[in-house]
Image (tube, rainbow, N blue to C red; front, side, top):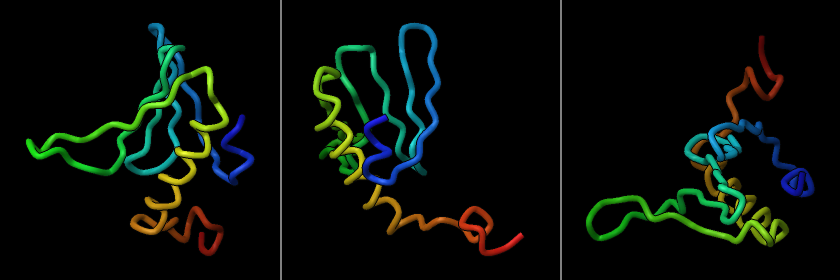
Length: 88
């Protein structure tokens, strides 16, 4: 998976014509085979989340952009000690 090149672990789930990639808190990428979509972290003037898109034909660019969003979220939601191997 392209995300691994950026040190990003993810779980993939599929069904009903979609694949969901669970990356981190507030970061789930989904695809219908034509587009990748994920929340960008911004909010529209009407208060709704703004989504980022990338064509499914360009997995490299999508992975780079998702990895960037992942790094942003890791600063907001750091890894808890029990997942980081620092505790029991």
